[in-house]
Image (cartoon, rainbow, N blue to C red; front, top):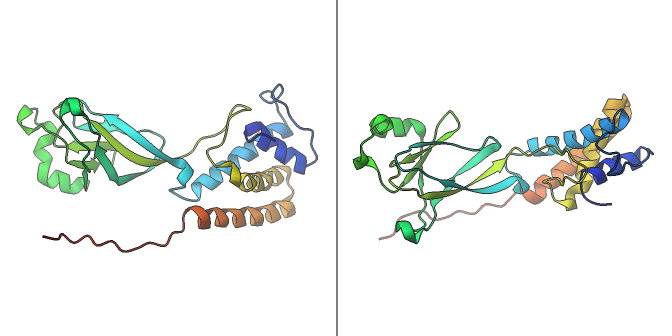
Length: 229
């Protein structure tokens, strides 16, 4: 069975001995079948909310700066940003290479560079060397860019709901079983079958632990950050 919204809903239908949907009648499905669709999306949302940094939600983004503009809103689907991933993108036409930007705490930026916020002088502009995240889901480049440089950074998304029959989940197909186990929990809940829902929840939680052990749990190592002269 294809790995898409339709296929996952039909996995639930099979387990509950219900008639399978087709791409023709999927969008108009109501009643139990609408419930099954909601169950699949609820399962995906549940998995995505279990961790901040599932690898399938990782995104590399490019931000084109504007000369004289200090603040930039970041994407509304951002869950968490890797503030140590910011770097300028090489552009020979602008005589700029790829350099890592240092992350600066917002309060420290205010303490040291507050005057830059309302200073329109071109003398304070240049190639950004620092990046600051504001409390209002914005990024500040310091110094204020003097050209249309491109900044590259990485973040993790909130995930998304499936809508159309052929929509594919962000979670890899190899973890299809986890989505289905979660969907069964929600389907049983919607049906009022408390006992089956609890058994399905136990299986679902075991699958999430497995996903976490494979994708999140790592053995860190110590890195020497001393400056050697």
